[in-house]
Length: 528
Image 1 (spheres, rainbow, N blue to C red):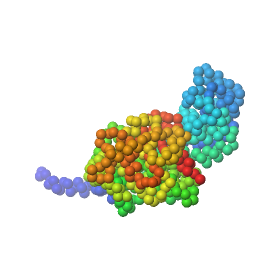
Image 2 (image 1 turned 90 degrees about the vertical axis):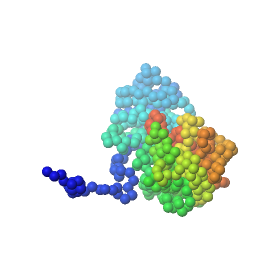
Image 3 (image 1 turned 120 degrees about the vertical axis):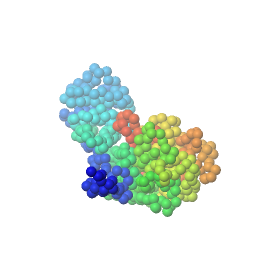
Image 4 (image 1 turned 45 degrees about the vertical axis):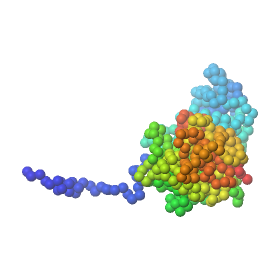
């Protein structure tokens, strides 16, 4: 039998096969299939009581030497004595942040003792850590939980509740079968009738905003990119009074000559954005401005990063998450301050359209930059964002926050962010806020020699110095050089502290939401 011609067989197979889409839909970036449509599982709500509930598991902060009756004055004497005896038998010494878990003592399913320093006025961070440490110990506890704060100084309970709220955070929306964790209440037991109102007024929105920032940083870059980052913030602030949101697209930024920001994103199919949140709570006063680096994924561009650890670069927008989180917290609690939060959003990818080492870009105010390394991109987006923010809002001061350099990690480890500032009052406000919140800063120099290090033969400045000397300082000089005087300016390099590699008292392993609390304190320092 004679074989059918090949063209006939191909035509027949095409007629027999079902019709298939031959092209991606116009404008589609990515697969078009969302990895999940679920929300994160529910956390335990924070509730309040003035008496110890029967049958609940207990968290008891113990400040100083072990004395359960003193630490939990609301417990029946026989219950306190039973817990004291069990703890003594276990040789528990109640050292700061030590814990002891007991089962079936005094009619309570589980009792967790959390050690604290013996202080007449405990730090707010120590109180939050005690609440968080206890909650981490009872993460899978199936019963109601009561945190007993009656043995702590007046005013302590709201901060203990705040720590308990932060420690519950989880991001499980992408698991096909998320582990079910209990969602029954956490009752904060306090004799202070005003504790609940103080928590809900000053701290509940801050906990929620920190959770929102953690969500942004944890989400994969396929979910959070410049446009979707903007959409998430718009949803979060919908209906909140005294808030105005401004979004610049690429055409608008191009009309403003923002070549430094646009150059970073030109290799990506996901267009760049500049997002500004303006909250007015103090009349016509000049606002405090916070500008965050929002690189939603940083491959390094043409100066591509090594593969190991590159997945973490989905979090290179932690600075942008911090500034929007702080602004959201301020707006929702009705802060008596004027605030501007700006997120400079771009995806730094290689490709035929990407900028190259050796290119020169022009910033909004006409200054030019020789791009030596496309992986030194955060400073590029901040330069245009700072210039626009100063022109648009004339702020009383401007603060940058960014996961900017590996050099700051080498210098300070995981204990501090680096602080660079050209204004002493602004620096002092930030240092004080860091000490109060536990998001501590270490002042770093802006040495005059950095100007020589960053000089370019063909442009006003280079974006990087080959050789690696003073990498964090030269990066800060670059931003300062392109941030117009006389506006007070400071920069927080948070590259070392954006993630926790193991559980911390108020931070389950993963993104910390770092900077939200720090910047919240800065905003409070400007309140009228």
